[in-house]
Image (tube, rainbow over all chains, first blue to last red; front, side, top):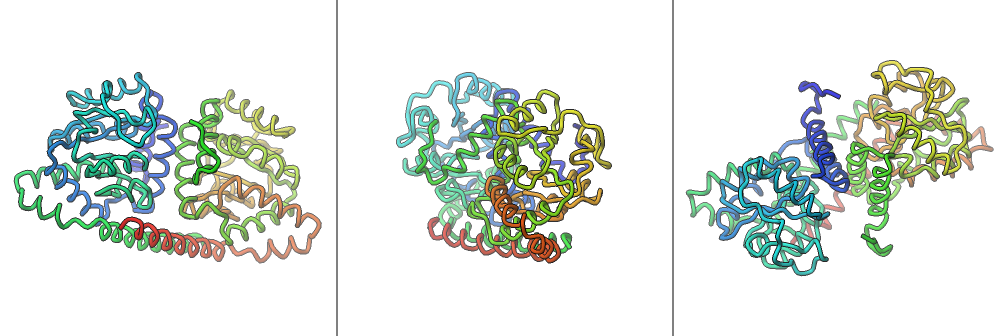
Length: 255
Length: 255
């Protein structure tokens, strides 16, 4: 099926296509497709646009990443499928290491994802030879690199599950999440939760990283004044306002 | 991975497992998994319970199905995977025909789904040998049976896409949808939109069918007084109220 670029849902349909292709290539897993659907529903409610409060969180995330001594970006199947290039660009701008971290881990899948990131321009991707464990997670899910996530002080975990986000926070790390569900455990647990779509969020964080790199005073100010609870409250207000608007429109149409 | 029945998200996780298995068996398709994720997000917002307005729509649906001269239940991959038994029980209670109608149609998949419904107790399932077309849909998606969906006066379309729901409404049929997205085109288009989860909705409709079968006066009264716009308005109010509550709880936790 060919989707015309003029289709009102073009971006969303193309993203879906990309993920189905990644699943066929053994990069994404069925559970990842279901998770993507959940994200789609929330993005629909958000109007498929970055909200003002998400922008604030993205700037804060950039400040924490620039300030980090050992920043790492965690990549799973969906992230690799949807935003390999965006991850590589952001990692170079910070600079940060990249570690592949899979919920449904297999050596073959790990290698496919590392290769995919290599094609997107990444060097020295961690993941295949873990030498440490994240406490509180079961066997395969705990595997990490000492030189990567395990030893990091700031970790960006896009599309992460709640258990892992929580385990990383318990290790004392600054955890930055990207998750469209404003009520998920990942969003609740993260130090800096970004409630936005992945391919909009990563380039925005990158833009702020480039702005902030040369401005340590502003980095300090932002990381000191960032208010998670206040930011999430603003996200909730925005969502409530959007939902009210959507309902009014649809009710009108439904008549 | 074994999920303990005491897990707070047991039902949701088991349903997800069931769908992944159905995809491995060639019954569900990747696009169906993504669609399921969208439903999960909305069901989460609804508290994974049947709302009072959904109950009203389910009773109205039962009245229209009992009143129908040629009622048909349409089944796709996700419906077969998640609720084959529920479909068969409801079809027997009405009684209604069952027709398999696939968005991503192949002969092999069609046969697998017909077999699955047979195992659940269905007889004479339509779908494999279509002899008619639904106007306004492209090639494969238009295929239908004269003795089934094409000739039906009332069609129950659980988890249907918007184009097809609209095409059936244009044919003058009473279209009953089951869709967790209260803002979807399917919900907007249907004559009686049920905004509820499939395996909760179908047995509830069945219960109402059994109640109403012997009460033609009540059937007439309900089908005459059912108010779609009013019902959807109640669904929206309920969702707004739920969302407000969720946000209050999470904000508290997030602090």
